[in-house]
Image 1 (spheres, protein in one colour):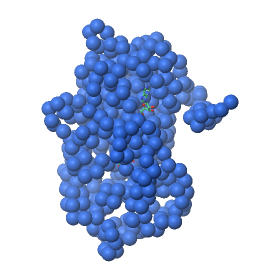
Image 2: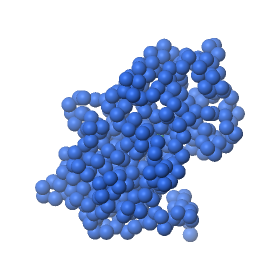
Image 3: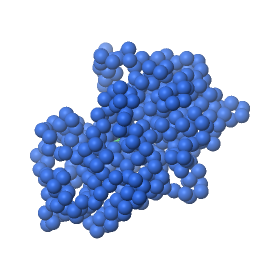
Image 4: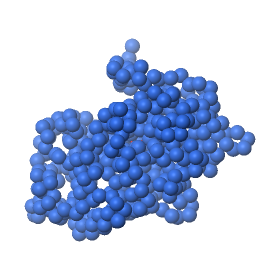
Length: 416
Ligand code: FAD
Ligand code: PYC
């Protein structure tokens, strides 16, 4: 008998000591108060906060694959809150605050490591833009400071700051509360904690339809395991949101793109922080195992495939070597891709939809891992109160009608 890679992977997970006792893969009941579509960090976290903060425990998280197998398990784990606009500072910094106590909250080590994120400036535009970010961040109480090339070098000794390079380092913005976390631990930590509070996690169960009553309100979801009734539905299905929303008759302002990453063979500690270079398009950190973790750019073409084009990886590695010639002979171990859904202003949508009882968390694009606890908290709040919290209120769907965009794409000059 032949097994797919996915089957083998899920069998390997079952062999893990925490499986299945601590993450029971339930069969669905007939009815729930809330069904969350998508068992990524955001969906599992929302289920956890619904149960923990609001006592809503009759909740199911319905997942087409395995928990954490989407973007949550595929990203480069960069956590930071150094965005330009006030609204972004509100939601991303709320997330960074929650990251701080998350291991204790979940009793599961998510390995949040505040090793600092250094964003390198290579031209006058970068310098002006990053300094503007530093000022805006500080006005919002978000830590971020400007470093000269010498200060960058002092902080990151392997950095080459000679000014005759093709992309000279003209300075950098350093956020010290920023860093990385262990991505699958986040999904598993939320899953275990939610499950312990009574939440059902139903894997291998794709949602294929959203049933609405005569009054237009949601009644439940059609799935591969049959109909599951729900008074409220929260959709947190990154990359696939437009497909799921279409099931409710809604057209969403989203495009889905593959986004890739890759890791090198493990090496001894060499990189003490996260480095981002928007102009050259290189993002790199070193994992606790020693692998260099490298993020690529999105493909140019829309797709729902969890793999991207080879030339994107090639470009990424050229960029990394441009900034760090020291890595030129480093061998790569593996690469993978995920699907990210992006909005026109590259800011997320977290809130109510025009369909009564249907809520959404999407559009985090290339940058939603950092937001996981904050987004989950806000989705849970919105579902519990049938109204957004003041932090996620600006990230509503209506802004694409009214034009009150939160244009972080223009602010950063790249999608990240
Ligand atoms: P996911 O983890 O993708 O969860 C959504 C789940 O919904 C999936 O498990 C999927 O299977 C499920 N689903 C979809 N459709 C259905 C359906 N019909 N029925 C049932 N289930 C369904 N962000 C950062 O902040 N920092 C980074 O460094 C970073 N790097 C990235 C690098 C890569 C290569 C990628 C792909 C993404 C990166 N991101 C990063 C973005 C980040 O990973 C995502 O924004 C975030 O993980 C989204 O979390 P989620 O829980 O919403 O989505
Ligand atoms: O959001 O910081 C980010 C990021 C870096 C690479 C992909 N996303």
